[in-house]
Image 1 (cartoon, rainbow, N blue to C red):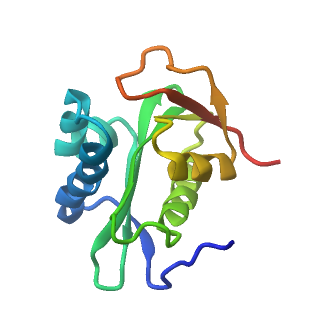
Image 2: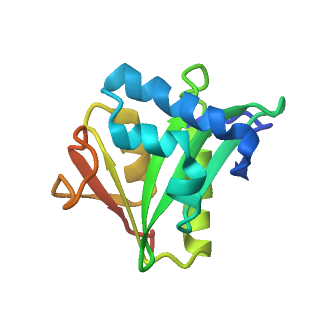
Length: 163
């Protein structure tokens, strides 16, 4: 089954006008499935400091009305290691391929940055997200990741580019 994609969705880099959307989109799923942890509030409240200033990126899926309907971030851990984090799609837009567009956009940015390792932490509760991650080359490793920031993380994956 192929995913439908709204043709007017574009992937754009962070702009201050979408800061509140970064928090809104992520808090929606965090509050639905988990408890919002202190690290979440820090990052969502100030992505410029916690993600962008260290060499990371924040991307948005923006519709034809210039509304942010999805987001994803790269957090630079140093030495070419990045965490894929804070991926969210508006609950009214899920299942339409926006997550895949965000994923392809963030993988492109990771490669353009010359990253050497890309990992993510997730939860077995988020089956559609895990399926997406697996479909683009993320492989499972024993969880939790050493030094994990998240109590909810019971999935640890590392990206292996398709050959």
